[in-house]
Image (cartoon, rainbow, N blue to C red; front, side):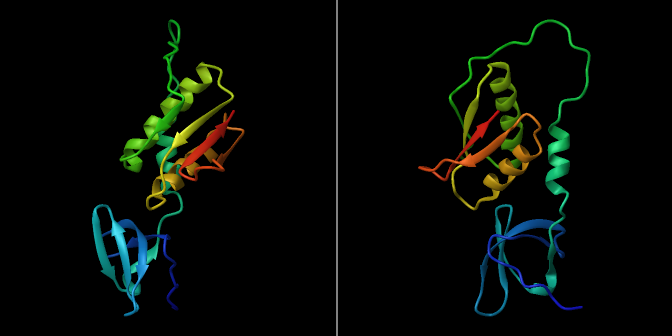
Length: 154
């Protein structure tokens, strides 16, 4: 079976570790430098495979609210104008995004801004996948003046 060529920025699974990572560099020796969590590894192509496609779907499903009987009134928190996710990992950021979106809807906002920064792009990708799977989001786009910010419209 022929090996697949991978690109910088592509999410892959490192077979020997059983974990996902992002290709950071293709070396001159024909190996790949892969960021897996806080590690940077040099990996041969035969130790790579495509990352599971349903990884983000499972993360989004875990964040969906469970149907529970509602009693009392929903509290409307005073919400910030922008959600700042700097320094957070995907696992930490997505619950904050879900809460921020809930508060925006409760506060009858037409749009909100999410500051994810540029970095490796992993947080941007996760936030965008989450927004695509959120039915209350009409559309979203990167801010024209700052590509580290996503504007979400309801």
